[in-house]
Image 1 (cartoon, rainbow, N blue to C red):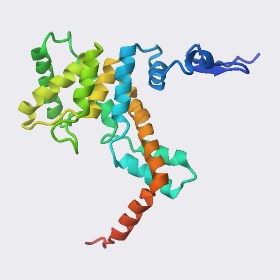
Image 2: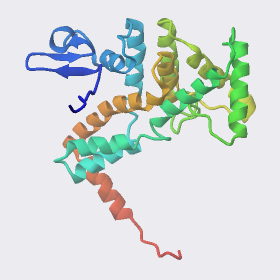
Image 3: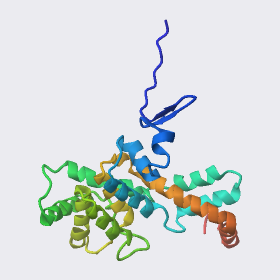
Image 4: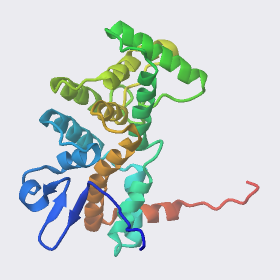
Amino acid sequence: MAEELSFPTSIGTSDAERITLLGQDLAADLMGRVGFGELAYWLVAGRRPTPGETRVFEAVLVALADHGFTPTAIAARLTYASAPEALQGALAAGLLGGGSRFLGVTEDCGVFLHEVLADLPELPADDAGWDAVAAGAITARRAAGRLLPGLGHPVHKVQDPRTPVLLRIAGEEGLRGPHLRLFEAIGRAHPAILGRTLPLNGAGVCGAALADLGLPVQLLRGFALLARAAGLLGHLAEERRTGLGLEIYRTVDRNARYVTPTE
């Protein structure tokens, strides 16, 4: 007798009468009762978040939803201009551009902070202790020739407006945990080591906040992409009205200059 195949999952299933998601009746228990952000957290963490966790998590999603004409938004618009019959292709094009310079910093920062914390025998008791840990981490990172994720921003040169707000919200909800504490300490300690002052950027503080929520640091880029999907959909809705993608293409095409390989 052939061995029976089994593909266990705790996410969801359905039959002719019922859809089950996370052990709940989707129609009776979740629809109209659970917000999308709360559900996204629940799906990944395997538990329903507290109201405070939901507030911080959704603040992160809002913070990462859009940042103007970034390469991800332009890629989505250009793809839609080329193939308006395939919305999914345009949305995917924007999401595929999430990497080390845009959106990926959320995960990079969370992973970096998590690795530093994992090496500590115990957590510091005060800001001075956190500053010492941060200084050591910055020095080691610099010696390795690697950039510090979460520092600096191409537009917000002095302060990223998202950073203090997310720190405040996390504090109000009692969720200013070790990742955020270390991230803040890096903001205080880096000028003396690097010789210049850079802002703590929004993508970095989002990574620290998500890590403090107990979410797997290896999945943090996924939350940035989840948030940006909403922003990209907004760009595509606007693209339908304005056709800016074609104008971007025509501008580049009109100003393209062919040069010989020897020039």
